[in-house]
Image (tube, rainbow, N blue to C red; front, side, top):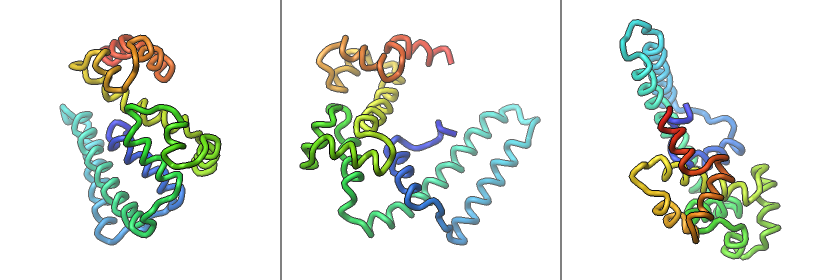
Length: 192
Protein backbone atom coordinates (compact mmCIF):
# COMPACT_ATOMS: atom_id res chain seq x y z
CA UNK A 1 0.00 0.00 0.00
CA UNK A 2 2.69 2.50 1.00
CA UNK A 3 4.47 2.11 -2.35
CA UNK A 4 1.29 3.31 -4.06
CA UNK A 5 1.05 6.60 -2.17
CA UNK A 6 1.95 9.89 -3.83
CA UNK A 7 5.08 11.76 -2.75
CA UNK A 8 5.82 12.72 0.85
CA UNK A 9 4.36 16.20 0.41
CA UNK A 10 0.90 14.75 -0.20
CA UNK A 11 1.33 12.26 2.63
CA UNK A 12 2.11 14.98 5.14
CA UNK A 13 -0.71 17.22 3.89
CA UNK A 14 -3.03 14.23 4.16
CA UNK A 15 -1.86 13.49 7.70
CA UNK A 16 -2.49 17.07 8.81
CA UNK A 17 -5.85 17.21 7.09
CA UNK A 18 -6.98 13.91 8.62
CA UNK A 19 -6.02 15.13 12.11
CA UNK A 20 -8.53 17.97 11.77
CA UNK A 21 -11.01 16.10 9.54
CA UNK A 22 -11.08 12.41 10.52
CA UNK A 23 -14.29 11.86 8.53
CA UNK A 24 -14.77 13.02 4.94
CA UNK A 25 -18.29 12.82 3.54
CA UNK A 26 -18.26 11.66 -0.06
CA UNK A 27 -20.55 12.83 -2.81
CA UNK A 28 -22.72 10.18 -4.44
CA UNK A 29 -20.41 10.22 -7.47
CA UNK A 30 -17.23 9.80 -5.40
CA UNK A 31 -18.85 7.14 -3.26
CA UNK A 32 -19.75 5.21 -6.41
CA UNK A 33 -16.22 5.61 -7.74
CA UNK A 34 -14.73 4.20 -4.54
CA UNK A 35 -17.14 1.29 -4.49
CA UNK A 36 -16.42 0.48 -8.17
CA UNK A 37 -12.65 0.62 -7.55
CA UNK A 38 -12.96 -1.59 -4.49
CA UNK A 39 -15.03 -4.16 -6.40
CA UNK A 40 -12.45 -4.24 -9.20
CA UNK A 41 -9.69 -4.71 -6.63
CA UNK A 42 -11.63 -7.48 -4.90
CA UNK A 43 -12.22 -9.18 -8.26
CA UNK A 44 -8.52 -9.08 -9.17
CA UNK A 45 -7.58 -10.44 -5.76
CA UNK A 46 -10.06 -13.31 -5.83
CA UNK A 47 -8.91 -14.53 -9.29
CA UNK A 48 -6.38 -17.05 -7.96
CA UNK A 49 -5.86 -18.65 -11.38
CA UNK A 50 -4.65 -15.48 -13.12
CA UNK A 51 -1.00 -15.96 -14.04
CA UNK A 52 -0.13 -12.35 -13.18
CA UNK A 53 -2.47 -11.99 -10.21
CA UNK A 54 -0.01 -10.16 -7.95
CA UNK A 55 0.89 -7.67 -10.65
CA UNK A 56 -2.73 -6.95 -11.56
CA UNK A 57 -3.70 -6.62 -7.90
CA UNK A 58 -0.85 -4.13 -7.37
CA UNK A 59 -1.90 -2.09 -10.41
CA UNK A 60 -5.56 -2.11 -9.36
CA UNK A 61 -4.55 -1.15 -5.82
CA UNK A 62 -2.51 1.73 -7.20
CA UNK A 63 -5.53 2.96 -9.16
CA UNK A 64 -7.75 2.62 -6.07
CA UNK A 65 -5.28 4.58 -3.91
CA UNK A 66 -4.89 7.30 -6.56
CA UNK A 67 -8.68 7.65 -6.78
CA UNK A 68 -8.82 8.02 -3.00
CA UNK A 69 -6.05 10.63 -3.05
CA UNK A 70 -7.88 12.54 -5.81
CA UNK A 71 -11.00 12.71 -3.66
CA UNK A 72 -8.98 13.56 -0.56
CA UNK A 73 -6.97 16.29 -2.35
CA UNK A 74 -10.16 18.03 -3.48
CA UNK A 75 -11.33 18.17 0.12
CA UNK A 76 -7.93 19.49 1.22
CA UNK A 77 -8.06 22.21 -1.47
CA UNK A 78 -11.49 23.33 -0.23
CA UNK A 79 -10.01 23.73 3.23
CA UNK A 80 -6.96 25.55 1.86
CA UNK A 81 -9.14 28.10 0.09
CA UNK A 82 -10.99 28.73 3.37
CA UNK A 83 -7.69 29.26 5.22
CA UNK A 84 -5.56 31.10 2.65
CA UNK A 85 -2.75 32.23 4.94
CA UNK A 86 -2.35 28.88 6.65
CA UNK A 87 -1.21 28.21 10.16
CA UNK A 88 2.36 28.71 11.30
CA UNK A 89 2.79 24.95 11.31
CA UNK A 90 1.52 24.63 7.72
CA UNK A 91 3.83 27.45 6.59
CA UNK A 92 6.73 25.65 8.27
CA UNK A 93 5.91 22.40 6.43
CA UNK A 94 5.68 24.29 3.14
CA UNK A 95 9.12 25.81 3.74
CA UNK A 96 10.59 22.42 4.63
CA UNK A 97 9.10 20.87 1.52
CA UNK A 98 10.69 23.61 -0.61
CA UNK A 99 14.11 23.79 1.09
CA UNK A 100 14.88 20.44 2.75
CA UNK A 101 17.33 19.56 -0.02
CA UNK A 102 19.67 22.33 1.09
CA UNK A 103 18.59 23.33 4.62
CA UNK A 104 18.34 20.83 7.47
CA UNK A 105 18.62 23.09 10.54
CA UNK A 106 15.69 24.26 12.67
CA UNK A 107 17.36 27.68 13.00
CA UNK A 108 16.99 28.34 9.27
CA UNK A 109 13.23 27.66 9.25
CA UNK A 110 12.65 29.57 12.47
CA UNK A 111 14.41 32.63 11.03
CA UNK A 112 12.32 32.40 7.84
CA UNK A 113 9.17 32.44 9.98
CA UNK A 114 10.55 35.20 12.27
CA UNK A 115 10.25 33.07 15.41
CA UNK A 116 12.71 31.31 17.73
CA UNK A 117 13.75 27.69 17.12
CA UNK A 118 12.33 26.77 20.53
CA UNK A 119 8.93 28.24 19.68
CA UNK A 120 8.91 26.50 16.29
CA UNK A 121 9.56 23.17 18.00
CA UNK A 122 6.74 23.85 20.48
CA UNK A 123 4.34 24.66 17.62
CA UNK A 124 5.31 21.46 15.80
CA UNK A 125 4.96 19.33 18.93
CA UNK A 126 1.54 20.82 19.69
CA UNK A 127 0.24 20.32 16.14
CA UNK A 128 1.70 16.92 15.31
CA UNK A 129 3.48 15.33 18.24
CA UNK A 130 6.78 15.61 16.32
CA UNK A 131 9.55 18.17 16.71
CA UNK A 132 10.61 20.55 13.95
CA UNK A 133 13.82 18.57 13.49
CA UNK A 134 11.86 15.33 13.09
CA UNK A 135 9.78 16.94 10.34
CA UNK A 136 12.88 18.24 8.58
CA UNK A 137 14.51 14.81 8.77
CA UNK A 138 11.31 13.14 7.57
CA UNK A 139 11.16 15.25 4.42
CA UNK A 140 14.90 14.98 3.81
CA UNK A 141 14.89 11.21 4.32
CA UNK A 142 12.12 10.76 1.77
CA UNK A 143 14.05 12.81 -0.80
CA UNK A 144 17.25 10.97 0.09
CA UNK A 145 15.60 7.60 -0.53
CA UNK A 146 14.33 8.76 -3.93
CA UNK A 147 17.83 9.89 -4.87
CA UNK A 148 19.48 6.70 -3.59
CA UNK A 149 16.98 4.60 -5.52
CA UNK A 150 18.21 6.23 -8.72
CA UNK A 151 21.26 4.11 -9.54
CA UNK A 152 22.27 6.56 -12.28
CA UNK A 153 23.27 9.07 -9.59
CA UNK A 154 26.63 8.68 -7.89
CA UNK A 155 26.93 9.26 -4.14
CA UNK A 156 28.92 12.42 -4.88
CA UNK A 157 26.10 13.76 -7.06
CA UNK A 158 23.56 12.98 -4.34
CA UNK A 159 25.74 14.65 -1.68
CA UNK A 160 26.00 17.74 -3.91
CA UNK A 161 22.25 17.76 -4.58
CA UNK A 162 21.57 17.65 -0.83
CA UNK A 163 24.16 20.38 -0.22
CA UNK A 164 26.53 18.34 1.95
CA UNK A 165 30.00 19.85 2.27
CA UNK A 166 31.71 16.47 1.85
CA UNK A 167 31.12 12.85 0.98
CA UNK A 168 31.90 11.81 4.57
CA UNK A 169 29.23 14.16 6.03
CA UNK A 170 26.77 12.73 3.53
CA UNK A 171 27.65 9.13 4.48
CA UNK A 172 27.31 9.91 8.20
CA UNK A 173 23.91 11.52 7.63
CA UNK A 174 22.66 8.53 5.63
CA UNK A 175 23.87 6.16 8.34
CA UNK A 176 22.14 8.30 11.00
CA UNK A 177 18.73 8.45 9.28
CA UNK A 178 18.67 5.08 7.47
CA UNK A 179 20.87 3.01 9.78
CA UNK A 180 23.14 1.90 6.90
CA UNK A 181 25.75 3.43 4.62
CA UNK A 182 24.68 4.64 1.16
CA UNK A 183 26.28 1.61 -0.52
CA UNK A 184 24.66 -0.80 1.97
CA UNK A 185 21.28 0.82 1.28
CA UNK A 186 21.67 0.38 -2.47
CA UNK A 187 22.81 -3.20 -2.02
CA UNK A 188 19.73 -3.99 0.10
CA UNK A 189 17.46 -2.48 -2.55
CA UNK A 190 19.19 -4.48 -5.28
CA UNK A 191 18.61 -7.68 -3.27
CA UNK A 192 14.84 -7.10 -3.06
